[in-house]
Length: 472
Image (cartoon, rainbow, N blue to C red; front, side, top):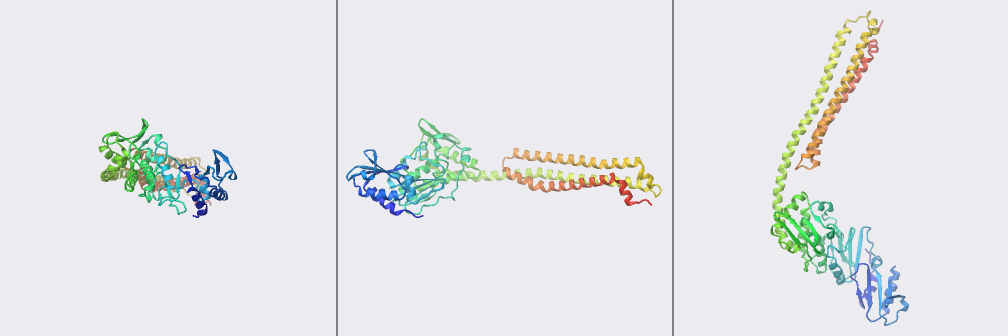
């Protein structure tokens, strides 16, 4: 990006001659030391040209630039949001930007934000611009870099943790929820630089509150509870010494591992191991720095056994569900065979009855009498109705029976499953039953249409008979 270097150079010259109050996020305040007006005039003109409207105060009263005399003790204030825009930085719609003109001012501000209850909060992403910074850091939702240099990109490849996932395993008091889950994580950059010590403390505290069962605010302090093999209550304090790069990376990787697949088992294993050596009312963060590496390794080893047990249970459960699904598939096949065999049996019976019982005795002289016989007409109408009624009853009963049994099978396995995810149960049911179900509906429609065609033919038997054996 293109920075407004000339404006920044002019402002730096004025900053070097003033006492700056720069540890606020909204306003830059400069107090003159010797009352020099020359640098002030150049700076005000440069700011005005960039669209910034600073305020000049004399004895706490606002004045114009031409009212300031040489040697007067003036104060200049400017909105940092306007300065950020004037320097050429345009934040994204979901991005909050804070600006500081010295690493010392940034450090004073950042160290005040380590408190979970009153710490600085932002809706989504935060960019921190600091003049004269020697390095940069970045995470999924936080980055800090130097003015006039390319800013690091947000680490979009880093694993993120959904708040609803955390809430299912960790109870966090509202006082400890000032920042969103994972907002202060730092995953890349110069984490070893002392300038980012307070940001590392942000990240450490935000991650530490996820490696417990409960974070509560009691007696003006935060307490964490570990409910493992033994129940331990410890203090989520603010150590004066910042963590090292390795300690922060270990803590963040532990959190990511903890909330990955089978997070309930992973979280329980790690908490159980941490609770073994935890001491009542001791510093939780200090305890994590000393014991997290060993606890994480132990939890990983035990998790492998849990995974093997879950795989064995899932394999056994898959075999059981396959037996039930196969039985249901066989039921579909049996219904298809029953429909087709019953239809063919009735069709053959009707042909034999009509062919040998009636048509075999018909000659040309008796054909006219047969067509006009009321009893014969009633017989064919009843036979036509039989095929319609049979098809309706057979289709309705088979369809309803298979629908109910399939629904009961699905509900049974969704309620009783313990190792297989719901999507896997659904996939097994669909893969086996769906082809059989399609075959059943194909046979159903063939039988239904065939019965309808036979019923229509029997109902219009006179017309068909006249076409087959026309009278002379």
